[in-house]
Image (cartoon, helix red, strand yellow):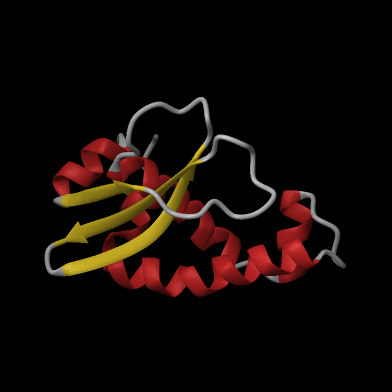
Length: 124
């Protein structure tokens, strides 16, 4: 099933605002967004970034696709994380990224609840 269909079925919407600070070292022209996802009474607000070639606002499906990937990364061991994504185990950047995913994972799971697997398994 398409992720856009899953979002519609679950009544997940996104409010997207352009602006914010792009992290140091990112590609010039990266677009910073603040995205608030809504599902019933639940809300989740996250920063979201698109590359310079991406035109237009990200959709709820775009953001959820990335968040599901971040959850998977954050639930790995650090050793598996660096192996999967090609980081050096001694990299502070890798550690920072891993910890950010690990902090985000329970928030995304709480937001989606029992619907996490539906989002994770959907095509985007």
